[in-house]
Amino acid sequence: MLSFSEALSAGTAGAAPALEWLVPLLDAKGGDETKLLAAADKLREKTLGNSVHLRGLIEFSNFCRKNCHYCGLRAANKKIKRYRLSKAEILATALKAEKLGYKTVVLQSGEDLYFSSEVMSEIIVELKNKTKLAVTLSLGERDEATYLAWRKAGADRYLLRIETTDRRVFREIHPDSDLEYRKNCLYTLKKLGYQLGSGVMAGLPGQDSTSLAKDIIWLHELGVEMAGIGPFLPHKETPLKDEKGGSLSQALRLIAVLRLVFPYAHMPATTAMGTIDPLGREKALEAGANVMMPNITPTEVRPYYEIYPNKICLDENADKCFGCVTARIIGLGRTVGTDYGHVIRKNSGIKEPNSR
Ligand code: 5AD
Ligand code: SF4
Ligand code: FES
Figure (cartoon, rainbow, N blue to C red):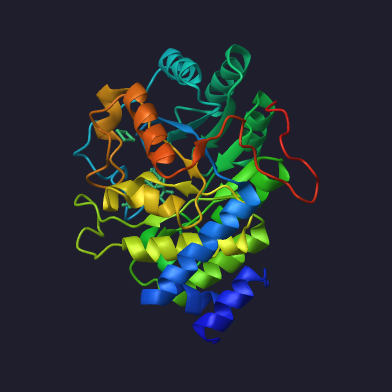
């Protein structure tokens, strides 16, 4: 292992991701930790500037066929009320978001097969016809034909976190998912030309800095263009209810290290960061992040999308959250992005591809 200073030099010089420098950075403490976050913040400013891109998040169904051990939406949780927004409600939410100034909507749900290849394709086509929005999907694992249909319908981006690449940890918390299958979903999405996002949870039971470093190496091999991370927050209606959960500082170090490894990737200051600390999203934006994903889900159903407890903004509406995040961004001396904030593909020279 390198010393912290050697590791930081390697990271800021753009060294290929390797355990010898990733682990000391992920373990940084005190003054070293401060230096790491500052280095990531500086690199973000150099590569991506000061704008923060907003993505409006529509949580349109909390039905899920799976039973991930950490998640409150797991099928076995009978204590939450399940809901599905209709196509008309999803479209109305997106139209409102566009009026507010959003350039992207993220359609997210549990793994709800009601939203089949066909049903979802219709929604995407109509969204693309009625708005100029970029469309990101976050709908979990599906087969290649379905991913292809949605891409053809006009979806621009896909988010699918790998959660962890540690075979043992993955198996332990995913009773009905397979690591190789999930990796294959990501390879397929990439092949189909989606702007690709993945990421991990920090602080899962059995995870350590070495396993997080290996996750980063794998994400680099995959070639992710967006990287989303947040602390694991234990939910009382799940098998992991008595676990400790992740910490803010570990999540911040992970964001910072990811920024060094992916100088141009889009990285959100996630809602989980805002849940673990009232200023968690601001801290993430000052540790390498450059995206925010305000909730635009209709207020009436927000409380039921409880993937983890104490989620912020449950009583708010889209206007309020838009105003709130805008003020937070300006408060940091940053600006709200005015373009699509598509991924930057350095090698292909694509900066702002048309959204369709
Ligand atoms: N704590 C933190 N994040 C969670 N997610 C699901 N459950 C939890 C939890 N209890 C994250 C997963 C998933 C994303 C949508 O939410 O990483 O990919
Ligand atoms: Fe379902 Fe996703 Fe929650 Fe797993 S993490 S139970 S797939 S909503
Ligand atoms: Fe919803 Fe602050 S982001 S009120």
